[in-house]
Structures are given as C-alpha cells and as structure tokens.
Image (cartoon, rainbow, N blue to C red; front, side, top):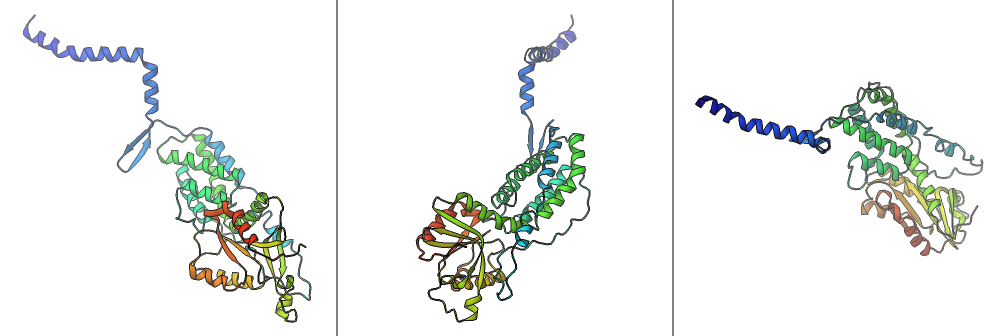
Length: 355
C-alpha cells in the first residue's frame, strides 16, 4: 500500500465515521428528532418572522363562516324599534328633550375583491378601529384588545367577539407565512366581502348599542332593594316643592333619561352619552340643555367613552345643574357603576315618583 492510498484512507475515515454515527442516530432516534423539528415552527429574522412548515388549519374555513353568521344578525333590531315605539307627545305638551343616540347613515364600502386572509385582516382591523371610536384611554392597542373594548361597550356580543378574534388569529398565521389551504382561501374569497360589509354596517348602530348596553348592565347588576326605570321621561316640575309652576318653561319642560334609579326614598339618573368627548362643544351644550330640563336637585351620573372631559368642560356642565353631576368613564371604570351610583343616592334627598 503506497503513501497515496494511506493518505486517502485517512482523509475519508472521519467523514465516514460521522456519516455512520449520523445514520445510526437517525435510525434509532427518529421519533424524538421528528418531535424536535416539529417544535421549530417560528423563524425570527431582522425585520420580521416566518412560520416554518405550518399551515392554517382546515377548520379556518369554518371560523370564517362562523364569523359571517355571527355578524349577519339584524343589527338594527332593538335600536330602531326602541325609537319608533315611543308615543307622540300630546298636542298641549312640548316634546321632551331627547337623549337617544341617532342611527348613523350606512356608507357602503367600495366593491373590492378580498383575495386572501392578509387582505381581509388588514381591512377588518381598520373597521374595528373605526367602531371603537372614541378610542379608549391610552389609545388603541392590538386588534384583540380593540375587540375586547367593543365587547365591553356592547357593540359586539360574546359570540361575535370570539368569532372575530378567532378569524384574526388565523389571519395572523397567514401573515407570518403559514400555508393557507384551498378550502380556507375559498371561504375568504366568498365570505370576506360580507364580513367587511357587516362590520361597516355596525358603525351605524355602535353608539345606539352602547346606549342600550349600559342600562341592560345596570338592570343585571342592580342590588336588592333598588329599582330602575329605563327610558323614562321626567318633568322638571316633578319634585313640586320649589318650582314656579306658573312659569310656562317650568310647567312644560321635560327630559328623557336612559335610566332612573331608586334606592329607598332617593333617586338618581343614569345617562349614557356615547358621543360626549373632550372638545365636542355641540355635545357639551346638548348635555347642558338636557340637564336644565331635569328637576334641579336630581343627581346625575353621565356615562361616556374614551378620555374624560377637561376640568373646564366638566365645570361648565356642572354649572347648569344644582344637583350632583358625576362622570363615569366606561372603558376604564365600568366596574365602578354601582359604587358611584350608591354614593350619589346616599348623598341625595330627592325621590322621583315612579310612573
């Protein structure tokens, strides 16, 4: 054996040894190694991340269809009907100052093809942000957090919120590079436009749905011994002890309230104002006019969304009413509804008679 053969054998010995060892390990440890590879699902790189060998579940198609079904309910049921059910004022009465949120005008979305999950997610996320206006304190967060905001405002019910969140989750998988099965892609193409249209339609009733959700929540949480009268009209003369009944404005002034809460011999008003926000001078003046039509000493809890009013704006509202006026920021302090109401009622000495 010459020197060349010895050198060649020496050069090949190590690679062959490694190959034999690797083959032995793969043959004897296939299952553990397979599980290890399956766990390497996410690759992060500068500027983004990608999923490795992952596919959106076939059940994603059912998720899309569930979302369509959840959103396709009659969104105006209960809101439009609530408004039209009110009896007209008598000929000798002045129409009470209204407080209900009007239904918005529906603006159809431009007809566009929704060709993939990522496109659906982007457009749906924009609509979800519009639905959550005014934004919660601190501004908008992830889409899932905004969906939670809409749920706590009553704009989405539990089924709708869960379906929308699940659809966003599978869309996020697709955005990270997961393979989208044909069945899911077809469901997006067929149902994506309907999902966007229903979200756009929700914009017309979002404020009204919140205005109905708060009194419904109040009824559900009402402590024993309390009572509530929803969508009540209250004449300013109802107290009857210090009002000049000879004045026409005092005799006829009436205001409609979202809820009149009574505890023992004390009453307070809960009023929901979805569009009241800092800088909204028209809404602030509307609240002032509404307060002036109430009994002067009746305590009032204003419920609003987003950030609180400025100190100057709050003082301007309170200056138009002799009774206590408190503000509850629903996005932040919804759990304090009963506690604040109890404080108002305990400080009140006014009872408004039930109808």
